[in-house]
Image (cartoon, rainbow, N blue to C red; front, top):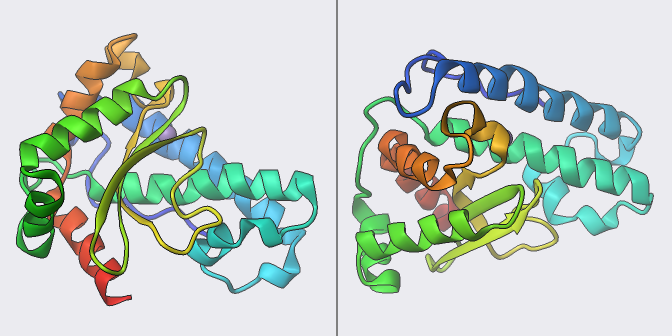
Amino acid sequence: MFKQIELNYNFNALEPHIDELTMNTHYSKHHAAYTNNLNGALDKLPELKGQSIEDVLQKLSDISDEALRTAVRNNGGGYYNHNLYFATLKPGGSKKPTGDLASRIDKDFGSFETLKEKLSSAAAGRFGSGWAWLSANKNGELQVSSSPNQDNPLMDNKVWVPVLGIDVWEHAYYLKYKNLRGDYIGAFFEVLNWDEVAANYEKVLSA
Ligand code: MN
């Protein structure tokens, strides 16, 4: 049975960038529902018992029942994506990457500012609900992408692993930012902890 990650900060800790009601609703209602619904779907797929969520998503197409496959795609994606999202947020988090990640960003994108622009435009340009991603492969290469709904770069793929995800579903920002998604994206970077992203990157390299 999968469990939501525990937050090591309070719902109001990211104010004024991300407001308390949004954080509370996002974690306690949306993320909780994805988690419950994932566990419900997996109850009907005993052959997947004991697999990590990464394994489940990387081999989604192995689920032959279409309705169950869709339920695992939407809710397993929602479960995994939000664990990643909430874990990379931190009040006063490290504003810049360091170490291997920092040098790879310079190599692949030219500069940290260019990477931020690419991530912001992937997040702003995603039509409707979805996510923008920074992903890595085992060679350490980096990729910016976006995906609809609760999809992510892990799905039916064993190459790219997300190290950072920006949630651009309206539930992530609408209470405070209304239609101004760009303002939320700017605020997200104010509370993003690049130390955690760098740790995620190291995990992909050493996997
Ligand atoms: Mn969300």
